Length: 223
Ligand code: GRF
Image 1 (cartoon, rainbow, N blue to C red):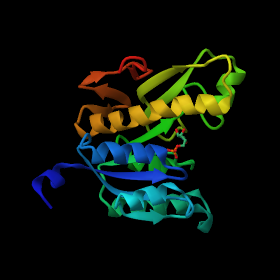
Image 2: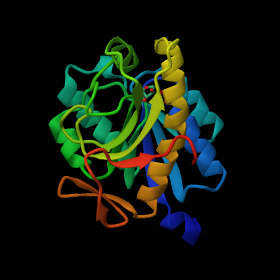
Image 3: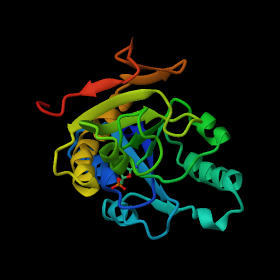
């Protein structure tokens, strides 16, 4: 291991499915844009496509299959043991579709990020694109937040907004949001790895300055 390796932020990514956000992180890391080491990808579903993406990139993978556990507590404990074996500095939830116990979220407080496809606090939970369309919203988007015990409720780090267009259906809107997801997740991970993005006393600091409740607004038109 070189000195540069030992200084890199160790990142474990948790997935449940396609893993396109994982791929965005792999691409940015391979392009030399992220001072991180992707030390493991863990899925709760054995068939998750993202596992193949990790294997192709030479990242160790493992599965902690939630269907093999009696309840949330025992699953989260097993998952925590797996994660901690990699001694990560940061845990990145990238399409990880599990509700986490309070003990688990507390263990990783300040070092676990999640991406959620809505402008939180709007539309916590599932079917965010359908709900934005049903509500007649003119704007929709994506949020990166630190994870706390409240589902999709932790302090917000970054948001990117997209317009809702007249002909949109949930698929086209999801696609427009996903483009932004792939831009802002690597950026959030970069800022965390550089020590610029932190959660302190339940607030998010960027470059030591507290952010407002909507986090740092990413300009989707010019950057
Ligand atoms: C993304 O919209 C993510 O925000 C959500 O799940 C979707 C799938 O992401 N929570 P991915 O392709 O598995 O990264």
